[in-house]
Image 1 (tube, helix red, strand yellow):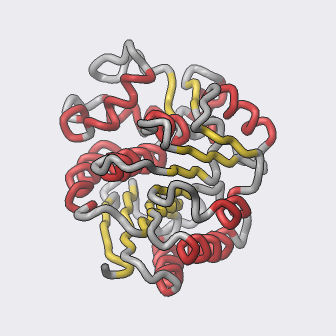
Image 2: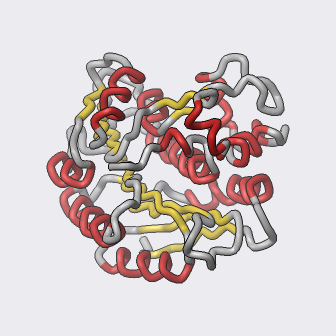
Image 3: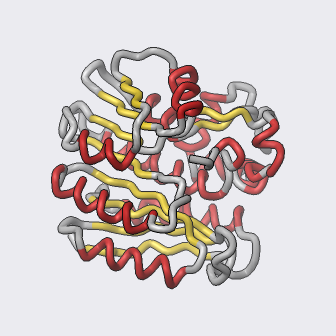
Length: 285
């Protein structure tokens, strides 16, 4: 309950998460049928990069700022750049004019197409839940819950319509967070076997993360891949050295789609020579 994402908005973890999320949404939209999108740990949905929280750590400068500094970003990450420009109309080449950063709820709301599409957002922190409602405004297709995201996933899956995606992005404050996460993901998948699940996770020490992924994969009966970006060698458990997403029921050829994007992100976001990317199959299709 102490974690506030406003201090970290736009950092390298956000960049990876949102680049991948936008590609998942683009794949969903290749079919016209309605979708239900879920964000289990939503935050406030929209972040002011000029505010004291973002300025204090300045993490966005080494994240989205480093990406925008390269003119090739618009060619390699067109969906991501389009989203940033929609939120920042004065965004210029090089990154000037970047004043606000979209949280996942904002991106998910922008992905709603018809009146039949639905978006469910959950946030446990009371102040953040109130800000989330204020930032996203009123929309009959959007349902915002002040509730625990893990409990919500148990209660709200399978959703209506059944076709869709759930983003699971907890704060990783609790010591048993990964265990709780695994139980929730496996249970949600059993109830919603056709749904796509995207689970974001931090990478501190790579070996520990690899053990967790193997344990999670053992409980899943659908195609599952992991996409990772480390900005430095992942051997020091005292700091976040990278992040990744486990994708359950991923779109066809998502690895091929993401590979050039991740290579570009590694080049722009690397902190030392130990930076790397990895796309691996955890459960075959």
